[in-house]
Length: 331
Image (cartoon, rainbow, N blue to C red):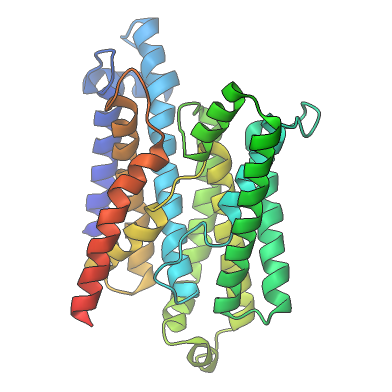
């Protein structure tokens, strides 16, 4: 029921969100444009209205859904894998590494024009994650060492990003980089949507395949090993999968916080701790959540646009405090 309801809510949310904006678009226009572009006949809309729906609003809204689903999924996996309720997709320093890579391309011209901002962000994210894996391995590879290594990488790459911007960027470049670092879906296109959706689908399959393994991790590593789980291999596979998904999402949408931190706690109250139920419902909840957050971000102070990460923080902090108080009362 939760999965079916989540899917229906997601489809309805996308259809309604696309209609919201300066140009008056109805839900009928949205369905007509989608049907025409998916082979359902000729579009009845004017080229301008069809372009607004299909080339501007629809890819942005679908990318918001994909990013929300991916970040929430990564948060649920990492909180169970590391047994840390404060873990989220950026605890491994992936976001900070992506920011450094993006800044290196935009400000320093890394890649001599051959790399786009998204490509630079992706490379930076992978370098940061490789550093975390190497450092945590040398320290013993336990969950707390992984978290500490992620914090160290996050601080290092954040410092590199700040140093590069302060010493090499002009005012206009600094403004553009800062907006991207806070999360932005304004440049979304269908290529980004397809890339992120493909990686999300692959990682979701991997995570669902390890659902019973994640259930076992809830009892601790020793208990999981006693149940037949290859602890080291399972942790490496799941960490690599979530880091890859986070890197791809950050490279396309920037750093959007709190989605992976808050949504797993909220959905866990509905589904219980079983990951076969928790993971798909969390992904759907994250998708619906970010669709509406992005809609709010691009309309609340129209014609200006608020970075998506700012809105998620404003909503996420009070929600997370409420979750903490509820957990305290339960304890």
